[in-house]
Amino acid sequence: MHHIHLSQTSSTQEEVKRALKQGSGDYLVSTDKQTAGVGRQGSEWHQFENALAFSFTLKPNETLTLTPLEIGVHLAKIFSPKLKLKWPNDLLSHEGEKVGGILCQLVGETIVVGIGINLKMPSAVPPFPYQVSSLFNSDEIIDPNIKKELPLKIVNYILNNRLSSENVRSEFIKSCVHINKEVTILNNENQVMGKFIGIGENGEALLESGDNHREKVLTGSLRY
Image 1 (cartoon, one colour):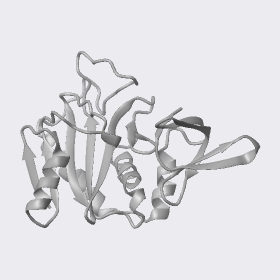
Image 2: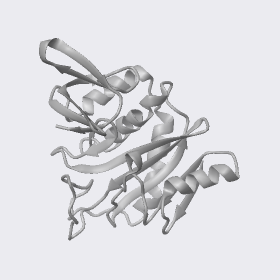
Image 3: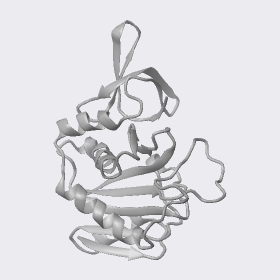
Image 4: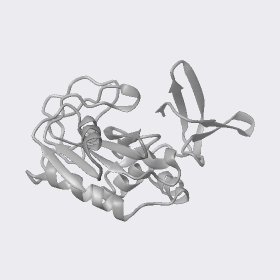
């Protein structure tokens, strides 16, 4: 694993993709400051000053579309009990506040995984359409080299603990904040409502509504 740490970059995802074009191998790019991070479906990723931002190459899960859920499961375990999961790729606090997110892009036969995690809340928080939080409290002391050293530890953990598709689905449920809760999933102008009862074979959300009607939702933004 070639680890490149930058003091500043626009996007660690783009840095990894550039590295892949220049040569073969596995890459991890971390940074002290990311200025133009991208979230799911091309949305802007708003990063706090004190946050982890890194991207790395990864062989896909045996079921390709379960890869981001597998990454979430690993992060929930690494930072247990601080992190919980929201389908499909959000990292939340126990109180349901967003702490971070995961972005996976397929480049050839390789997944480029991007992870952003708020480490500490800033003194002044800009307005967000949802509640936000951080991994550590304001009075906790963190290692000054955490933005360089922790990404490598996370990646090594993931590489050494890959999960089968079945285990991804079962482990995701254990850390899911909205299992058996009524949810709404928005995808463009479509809206699906129901009780979130599990994860399908390809990572889709399984919802149950009245008269035991079940529906599979492949993608979207979930609210609960």
